Length: 361
Image (cartoon, rainbow, N blue to C red):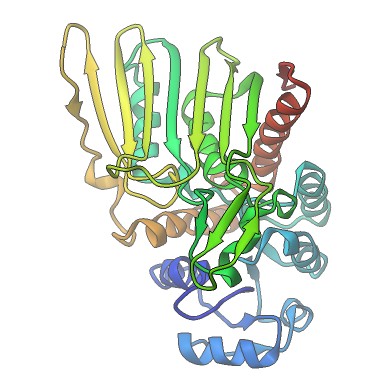
């Protein structure tokens, strides 16, 4: 594992408990951070057997089969390439690269080396999303006519809690923006459920050009968009409308996704627009029903995984990865899937820049 900081990092909150919930398939062999001292501190705090001096030492170790990359997006290319070059399978957090070109390069390299690359778009395997996908496939709404999604991005609301951990989110050049993270994760789920985009139009706006740093009192410049508007068509002809706003919802309802069909409607809701890390709820109505009814996710969709949303969804991704490695299947979101999602993001950026509809091929 690369990028493990005890108690505060995404790896500590999500990946360690997820992997420990799957002891029949995985053992966390060690950690590599930016220094041996940092690795040793993380290994001691998290009870891991080994601290590696650096990534090069870890990827060359024969006892390592998979490298998990949970660092900032700007470092993904370098670390993922080193792991693939060493013949290791890779689980990389989304986004795969800082832009489409890096993602395409890494996916092609993994294919050429014959290793499995899995991308951490874990909203796609959330139990609510998997059940929603089944409901749509079973015809609950009939033919999908359109879909609309309004959400809050959480960050990018004019204030960040810590400079060290959050300042990089303000710079669009760093590749970790509201468009790439919450919108990207949710787009992965949306396209899994409803199908691919045929074309997009978009507006990206930075309405808050500065952000207050709560722990230092500084004011930092912001170049990342805090307003993301996307409209387009799916390949089945259904119109799509998406609007993400920076900041938190006033009332705790930060995600509303509605799917409208010829026979009924489904609403997906959550406290924030990060569909990959919050509990979601489903409601539906069919025919002449005037009120939406709760659609309970069957227990079978949750059995065998942590109850907490973050490690639970990550564990589902890892379980698919194990299955693919053991049985030769293709069930986990792959680097090629990541490239497809990066292409949608790139099309949104191009449409916003040119003011013209962009087709996806």
